[in-house]
Image (cartoon, rainbow, N blue to C red):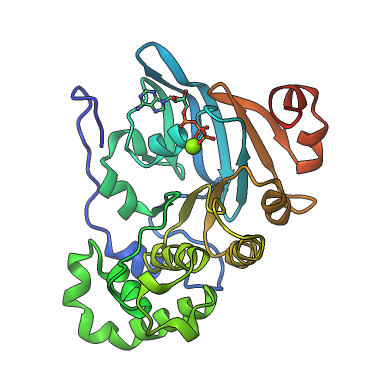
Length: 286
Ligand SMILES: Nc1ncnc2c1ncn2[C@@H]1O[C@H](COP(=O)(O)OP(=O)(O)OP(=O)(O)O)[C@@H](O)[C@H]1O
Ligand SMILES: [Mg+2]
């Protein structure tokens, strides 16, 4: 929520166009509907500062993510990684700075649900699925969430919706679990299901905060495979401590951002940042 009462909530209008036709369907080229990505940037943060009782959790943070990019963010505990996601999703209002989705959507002037509708999906660390419902229904419910207009188009879209659920089930590797209760799934399967639920909303940008935490090595690599597979479908920002997972996502050429003390400490390929003296001192060398 926008917690600053001085800043009006400029809510975006309902935007059926974005989700229905704007965002490319799974497996096809990138995004963008009403999000202006003409300059190639899906997310732009400039000089963002957040203070909690005088302590700067974010301190003049500047960072940009390209359309279609899978950006890994690493950094020590307390670096401000989760706070950054709170700012992007409208949970925390920055004291200062710019936060834009594409060229023209000013996220600091929007409330949380509008930001989600504008195309940002967020995965929290703990899986949040509807445990008492079958996997299939979880995906169905996720598609309907917050979509008043969807109901009215439902008759026409039913077959499309079914196809999308099936496509998503295959993507998250849960085809054979479709009829099982979500509560019966393993931790790794629940995490993939929640990602599937976010995908049903066809986000332009997916934020994942420590998605591999608590996973077995196998589950972690399955998740890396899934996220790698999503490249080109949506842009992603992945915060993670597990360096093997980061390596599986970043490969040799992907960009990794290292945060510390509320700002960017280093940025480059995983090899670049691993060799960076300041990074070794403040994080990797601990
Ligand atoms: N609501 C809050 N009130 C006060 N301090 C907060 C609040 N949220 C975060 N902080 C502080 O801001 C700093 C940054 O926290 P944040 O959770 O963003 O770090 P992080 O990089 O996500 O760390 P971790 O890797 O442990 O998840 C921490 O010192 C934290 O204690
Ligand atoms: Mg965190």
